[in-house]
Length: 97
Image (cartoon, rainbow, N blue to C red; front, side, top):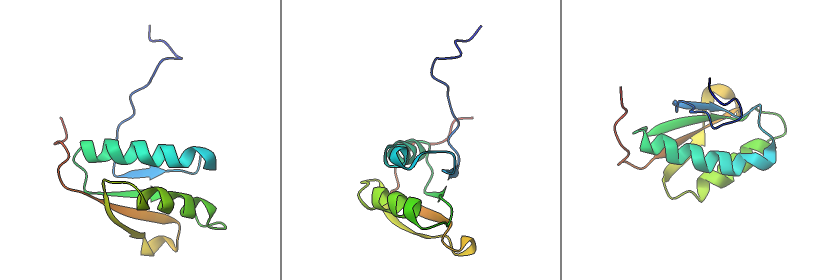
């Protein structure tokens, strides 16, 4: 039987939906997600923060702006400011099957 309170392995995909997270947790979450995505060999990831008043968008983009593994980022045009796409540096490990 697995420990329900222990750490859980979460698969790293090309997209992370931030709607369920509190704004105070977003900077560290973005930091860890970018590191994991880069390590998985991803070169581009999409962070879904929603449109609203732009508070979460600002938090996400501030975290990406100072992250050393982020080459650039931009608003995903099809979401009307509801998601940000980050381009990561090359050099992550290949995905394992």
